[in-house]
Structure formats: C-alpha cells, structure tokens
Amino acid sequence: MNLIEVFNKYPTQKDCIEYLEKIKWQEKPICPYCKSNKSHRMPAENRHYCHNCLTSYRVTVGTIFHDTRLPLQKWFLAISLIMNAKKGIASRQLAKDIQVTKDTAWSIQMRIRKAMIETPSLLTGIVEMDETYIGGKPRKSNNPNNNTPLKRGRGNKKTAVVGVVERKGKVFDRKMQKLSFKDLKRTAKQVIDFDNAVLMTDDYRGYIPFKNLIEHQVVNHSNKQYVSGIKHTNTIEVFWALLKRGIAGQYHHLSDRYLNKYIIEFCFRYNNRDNKNLFKDTITSALNF
Image (tube, rainbow, N blue to C red; front, top):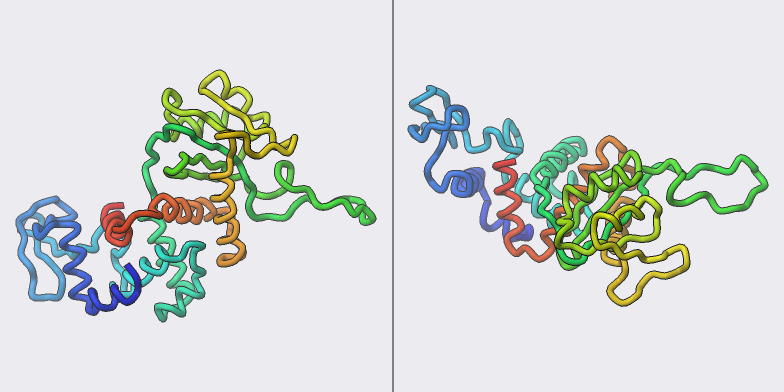
C-alpha cells in the first residue's frame, strides 16, 4: 500500500482505529488484560469497558502503538514508507516525510522493526550460507610507508554477520561473535532442514565439517571459482549487496548494539518481496508481536 492509498483509506483517527479493531478482533472486542469478551464501547473516543475486570482499554494496548501520542495515520504512513523503501529509510528522512522529530522517527522505526521479527521456518532445497562484515574500521598497518590495502574480511574490526538463504525463498541473518564451526552449526540447525537440503558455501574452513552433517558443496573462491553449474553463493551475495548499500546509502553508520534490528528489517522486506498484502500483514504482526 502506498502513501496515496493510506491517505485515502485512513484519513482520520477513527478510520485507523476501526481498521485495527477489524484486524485484531474481527468485530468482537477482547479485553487485553483478562481476555474477557464482555465489554461495551465507551462514549470516550475509541475505548471499551470490560465488565469482567472493570478496566477500560483500546485496541492499541499491548501493541507497538501502545501509549503513542501520534495520530495513527502517521504510523500507517511510516509503515508504508518503510515497506516500500527497498534500501531502507533514514530516521531524518522519515521525520521530514511524516513531520515528526528525528528522535520520534527513530523510535517509530524501532517499534516497527519489532513487528518484523519472523519465526524461522526450516529451509529446504538448495540453501546458501555465507558470512560478511559490517561497520567498524579495518586494522591499520603499523608501517606508515606500507601501501598495502587495508585488510578486508576476517581479521578486521568489523562485525561478522552470517546469512542463510533458500534459493527463491527466504533469508535469515544474524550478527555473530565468532565464526567457528560450532557457532555456524548452531545457526544452521535453527533454520535449515538438514534432511531435505543441499548446502552451498564458500571454502572458509569453518564450513568444512558440514560435509558430515548435510549434503555440502563448496565454491572455491580462493581459486577464483564463483559459479559451477548450480554450485554458487550468488543469491546470498546479492542480499549482502542490498544490505550494505542500504546501510551505506541510508543509515551511514550503525551501532553494533542495534545491528540485528536493522538486519531484521532487510530480511523482512526481502522475505515479503512478492507479498501483495504486506501492509496488512505488517499491521497484523504489529498488533500481535
């Protein structure tokens, strides 16, 4: 759903509330505190009164919209902007677009990212696994006369991120403290169906023991091999390019503390790239996160 559709369908706070109630309750309000369905709508705008626990509530209780002072239309606009921004949108730009402060825009984005958290489903078929490095600065040479390029990849001060993607399917990424086989295996076990998948990786030594757990094919990047028939890691490499361009072009700098939240955003958009009901599904998740 684009901005024009949001403006036309949900022009008032009442329209937004009615939409949220329809999605969350299907016209049968349920108290978020005691789960009773015995209530009535109060004269006060958008509130219900529970006859069981004698408490009033709104549909926004226990959602990312809870206790917000912003009009819900601005939340809807923010969701639309974020969902349609392939490379993400900076908080300063979002602040300008929906006319809020930068800090408010950042807070909105962080809440919306909570609604983007997906429960990993086991990946099958051809699955690619790879690692990349984000943020920080490479280790500098101790020799000021050394013109050797700064170190890239493993061994620098950047944060390691591991990604697993099913070809023509979903991707799941997370930052990692270590890239030992033990750590890679733990991540793989959470998202890959080892009995129904073929694993594609590069020749990093941490992947070598996977040959004892799953059908495993290796692309020898060290020897400039990148594609051999169906054997490649190009799918996850394309996702890395999208993630890094978004970070460099939109966010510029990310705190390591929040890196996983930004990764979740990029994964969510990628996994729902063909979802025609993405706006509604995001709202549904926002009401039940």
